[in-house]
Length: 100
Image (tube, rainbow, N blue to C red; front, side, top):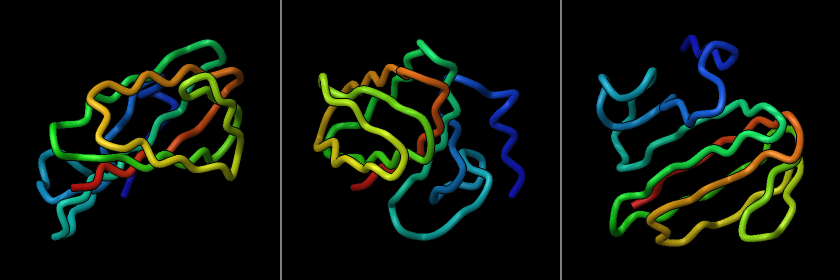
């Protein structure tokens, strides 16, 4: 799998999912995995479809979710949120699991 997060910054890039055209790797469960590399001060958004939830894993840097600071190693269940804006407080790397 070749994911160049340096050329696709400040967005969630699909890296795995059930539909080949939407991801760089495929698997059967109804789960999608996205990665994002953020510049300091950038905000990334991901709209979760109705009935879906998310789990955010901070790989590096510092971000903020609902007023709470998260840093490398922290994770957070996002619940069935329809719009998730995540501002970076430093250069950051994130992984988002979209779950049904």
